[in-house]
Image 1: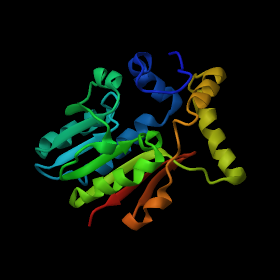
Image 2: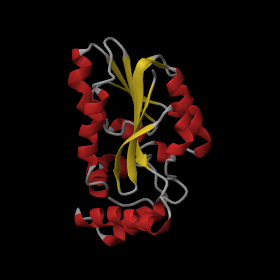
Image 3: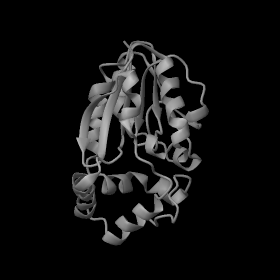
Length: 217
């Protein structure tokens, strides 16, 4: 896949090669998907709605298909990129829409898997708060994202861990650097400390990536 000079998912080559690319860049992608699926089943309620936000090709939808069907729930997959929507192979209903201005309905679970880092900072708070306001009691928001660095030497150590994983998975050093430079100004890491008021809790960390849950009690 040719790395765009300025990273975008609104690119046919990126969309068509996404599944292979994301697993090269994040070797723990399938492990994280399975973990999200396990946690999600604890919050999916009967006859309720589930949102997969930034759904890409449908990885999350497919992992949740069995439990959603068993509980007669419904999955709506939101994806801003038309090119990615064309490659959607997941379960549920795919909707080409920008989550930052989407009219969310009452739902029991929303999943944001590797998406918040691509949403402008000035729109993240309103998105999270909108999702929280529309959660049913007992529902949750699951977030998996690149997070803001610890800083200092240890922050550098964690960043290099991810770089080492990418190269070990077969990505060339040239492509690793090209991808990092293409993300400048496009990818801004998530800061979980901004959501302490919502009771955010961490459940995963690997290098500079992490995952959290926000529950509606």
